Image (cartoon, rainbow, N blue to C red; front, side):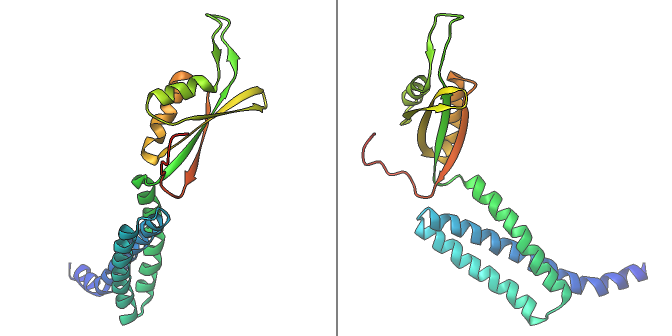
Length: 190
């Protein structure tokens, strides 16, 4: 038991500052990612608050490392940056801020087995509009023939609902999402 106590007394003073540095760097790098997202979204106050917090946390981590440079503290610094990058990306994805353009590709077809109704992008667009979303239809030619592209630019939080509505009308649609850096401003409906 004495050997274990001696080992803990020797190792712990080296490890705990490295662990604290790793946690601090993880926090400040995650805040930097959030700040960047806020800057891109033109959310000035949120970006400023995140930037200020990031600076304070970074100074704390740097102070610990520069107060006594050791391999353990340097490793903690680097590990914190790596973990903070991963955490920041996850936080940014979960925040779902900003806008996104949902592109739904609808192949043209006639349902001759039932009542001969025609399926195209106008049917999907009509359902999206009934649900309160703006939708624009473009006609083109794809690999397998005529296809319509239905565009709906919505908040990121609404993207899954738009896709679900489109797939409820036509389960075989292909969809793609395009990020829109600025929020959607409506000067009028198109």
